[in-house]
Length: 434
Image 1 (spheres, rainbow, N blue to C red):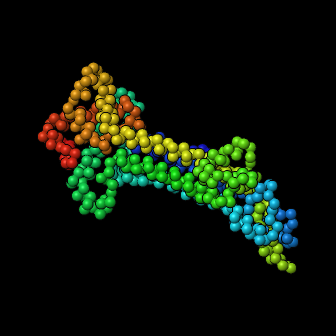
Image 2: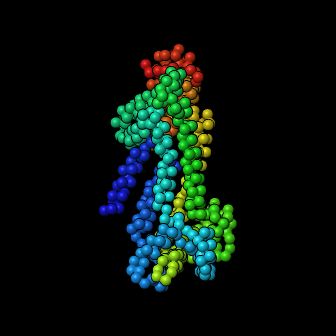
Image 3: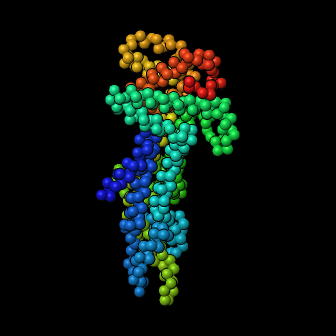
């Protein structure tokens, strides 16, 4: 029952993001948020509700009925000192103090909180992108993509009305963006204290590239956060028995090094990062006759979970960083190449011409109005929205919408030739509807 409720909660959370101005790598970033939320819950449950640490000393102080509870709590709060099986334990308080300063581990107490912080960081790019889209169009972009996605699976007889509706929706958004970015729109924003800091002057595709770069930046910072949190910068961090590992390899290929140790059968008694057995020095317990210090040996079952979590996170973040890099280059290639933008619209119109029974495809390439439709009307914002609609609704439905949009614009262009012939990229009409 509990698992069903968790699945239902996750489905409800992901429902608003099934459609929108996102691609597969953006979905991976959102999936990371869900994974981290689940992992944080599992780690917190094991840490605060189950057996996180058990410490043992051979001799208890007299009258210490609650000493075991005190010992476990003290060592959990204070931290533990790991030793390898072949190392000699310190014999004096000075030696223990030295190891306490150089080897004491206490990061595992903070694992759930750091994971929660990482979850927030991964959600920030999506939050910024959604805010930008909402501030520029009132949230209509997600509604447009959702409407197109649902209409793409309708029957052919009923789909025509949905195509017209999506085309009108897209036309209104393009006209609204053209108005905002026109001279009149800029003057209105300049006089509006609330909107004067908006990013309306930037196109959707450029802001989308910035969002991709932000995801990459967050992913890189997450790897650095893991490095700092686990203390990989400390020179005392050693992974092999008696041999200092390459500092560069440990810092930058943490997951690969850990996986290599697991596959080679070298378990964590040889390591200092995620020890399952460690020692805890409890100094200065005041009893009758003087102060006594105790050395406890502690087992840390929570570290069995922590090690798997951080190895998985390291590989997942590296994969996400690699995927986002490829996606950024792909979108940069699509946006920057001028022939690619033109061929996209021409391809959609050819598909529709074939569906309508037309065979002379050369008329599309020779249409003098098509250039103006692409460069002066759709421009970068319209082309970006069409690409996103294609990602969510498919090429067939997108071609129908493009054809409807082109026919509507063409009829308007023929009725108002002087207005459109005088239109340039630097000077746009405020209103384009009749």
